[in-house]
Image (tube, rainbow, N blue to C red; front, side):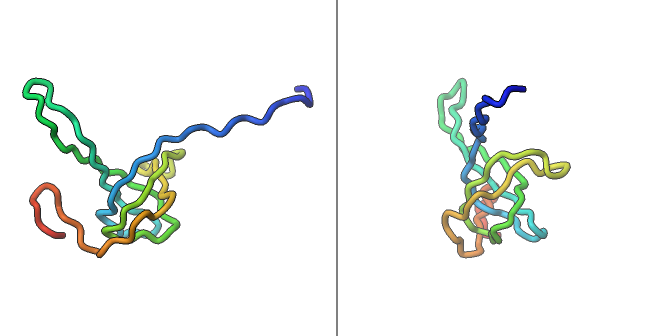
Length: 102
């Protein structure tokens, strides 16, 4: 190895913005991320929700809007980390499946 090595550029990690739907674990939250997709045949826009388990050192609570960043595997199902809390929520989250408040 020569002494003229350039430092490696930081990798671009994928980011998502979503709402915390469950925050009952220690240092782990479940974040729901919504995306819009178009139906192939009927061309109607459909809302799809994905949930991610994320490592939380910031203290996010249920209802908060957060930005999560992809990271190395932290456990069996955790591959995301809460980077920042964008908006503090009210603590009530609307269940998108049934339309009721959880």
